[in-house]
Length: 160
Image 1 (cartoon, helix red, strand yellow):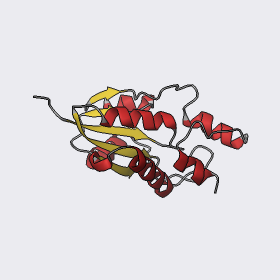
Image 2: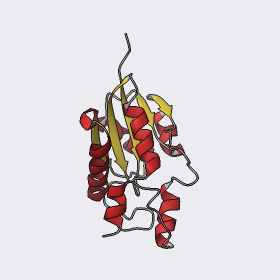
Image 3: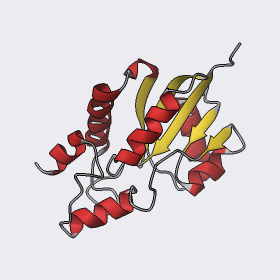
Image 4: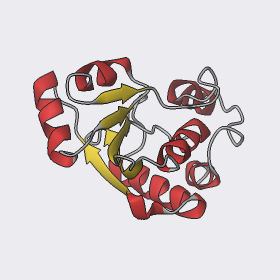
């Protein structure tokens, strides 16, 4: 018998990119994962260089992208505001996903915060040097091509 796990994937998704999508697909396809909480970090941030998209926009883009690609019945999407105190951030995350047994995040700070509470793994982002939010935001700022780095829904939204 397989012990089923509740997974958490924490990210800012600024913007959602093909590395995120690959990681989410790999997590949700695992036989031992019965639910994935996608936690959109920095939900209270928008209109800045590092956080250009609002929580609502990020949630909508993630939802629409995943609906086109996978069975989303095992996925929930929630926002998590930033906190100056690590313990407050952890407390709020645990309120969102109290049953989480495994956490995925590309962020070292997030992984460190979650290690005392559950198994922590780095997601499979594919080519992390290219498929990362910092690189994609820079390419957008420099008016370089990003179509090959992000899902169609993201590209369409950014070109509005």
